[in-house]
Amino acid sequence: MADSLTALSPLDGRYAGKVDALRPIFSEYGLIRARVQVEIEWLLALAAEPGIPELAPFSGAAAARLRALADGFSVEHAARVKMIEATTNHDVKAVEYFIKEKLKDDPELGPALEFVHFACTSEDINNLSYALMLSQARHDVLLPKLDAIIEKLRSMAHDHAAQPMLSRTHGQTASPTTLGKELANVVARLQRQGAVMAGLPMPGKINGAVGNYNAHSVAYPEMDWPAFSRRFVESLGLTWQPYTTQIEPHDGIAELSDVNKRINTILIDLCRDIWGYISQGYFKQVVKAGEVGSSAMPHKVNPIDFENAEGNFGIANALFEHFAAKLPISRWQRDLTDSTVLRALGTAFGHQLIGFDALQRGLNKVLMNAERLDADLDASWEVLAEAVQTVMRRHGLPNPYEQLKALTRGQAITADSMRSFIETLALPTEAKARLLAMTPGSYTGLAERLAREI
Figure (cartoon, rainbow, N blue to C red):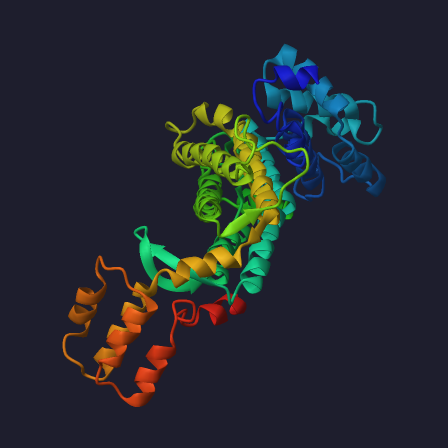
């Protein structure tokens, strides 16, 4: 509790329990563990390459011992790496030394020590580590959370597909929709962006100090190093990046940041709309026993989950915007400004995750208030003006738009006044009957069908 109360970041304080799923991925421990995995897989790939005769192929047991070091990498192991770093003052070199320390007494692996980190620059290890971390976060945490929100919204869209709702374009009464159709709009947007996020390539490179395989080709000029590099990167489940400076250019991280920013922006839009609908009384909120809405006004049930979600999506987007603008830029062949920025990736995703959970919690607490929705519609007969003037256009009546404008603009329209106007129109009997039978609640077009088809 004391650590929580003195934490500088709310992700490690007030919200610590809400981001536990990301902690093993984006923490310092998570980064070090990913580096160990990449270093070990690189050593295994080198040992399996016939073109490197000085490195004997490992037995199955030796390969298993190597992988066990990565798979069983613990917080205590990470602490040992940090102790080594205190001397080296270099985080990736500390990982290399840690692995060598673990292998030096192994009869089969000990002779391979100098092939740990062979021909690599630190960025070869780092870019692949971050790519693995982002891939894990995307598939194991972010997409499942997004999918859960989509499914909740889809369920609500189906449940409320037929419930008519007054639209408000520019804040003014407008042609009715249904509550379900408005939620279906959000589902469609999120599905599209979720597919973009899931399909984005996560690039990686391992090509040396300035991207030209300089050291590789000097040591083993006969080898096709680009082909070897490609096989290795793709064996990690990543997309090979063939052209780089010292660093992988981070365009993939910028793309991932941009799509997550779009997802968050869509959800901010949703949070604000539902906040407004709660204010209008279209939704009621489930009251939780013992919970306080306002410290001064006992009657209030504040829409805090939607407000919390909106705020956290905003923080995440500020960081995603910086990542997308900064990370693809590096002076000449390398500068170090990306290093400190990359360490903040977890912060952005942490706030996004908090936003996802707060939004889900809010959606689970709202109940549709049909009585209030219907009352708003019944007080807004002017919205049928669109329908009437469109039917008049079809049947060639003069100046339909202008006639309805004169009748409705700035005027209080009732059911009786709208029907009296329709009775005066020289329309075919069937068309007139259809208009006379129409109410604001029935004038929803194909909204119900569209909501059910999402």
